[in-house]
Length: 148
Image (tube, rainbow, N blue to C red):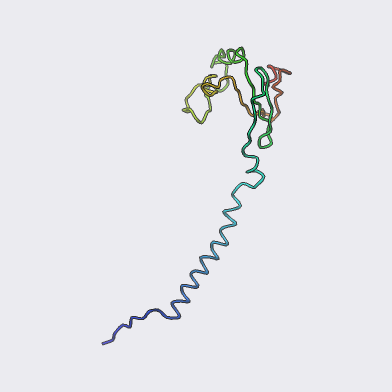
C-alpha cells in the first residue's frame, strides 16, 4: 500500500501562490483606470457645490450666480409675488405636478410644494429655458416679467 506524504509545502506551491497574487495585482491595475474614468473630473467636482451669501439680497430683488456653467436665479420675493404665485390655478399650468424629489410623484405644482416651509420668500431657479435653451432675463424686462 502507498502512503500519502504530508509536507509543509513545496516550491511549486509557492510559485502557484506568487503567480495568483501577481495576476490579481495585474487585474486590479488594469481595471482601476476603467472604473476611475467614470468618476467626475476635478473641475466638475470643484464646481458641483457653491456657497452664496444671500444676506444682502433685498426683498424684490434677485441675485444671479453661475452653477455648473448655468445661470441660477436666487430671488427674494415680495409678498405680492408670493400671493400671485399661490393664486395660479393648476389648470393654467402645462405640467400640474410638482416634480420635487422630496415630495410624492403625485404632488400638485402649487407654490407651497415648490418652496421650503418657513422660507417661502426665496425662489431658486435654474435660468435655462427648457425648450430652446435660451436664458430668461428674470429682472422684469421682456415678456411675463422677464421669466419667459
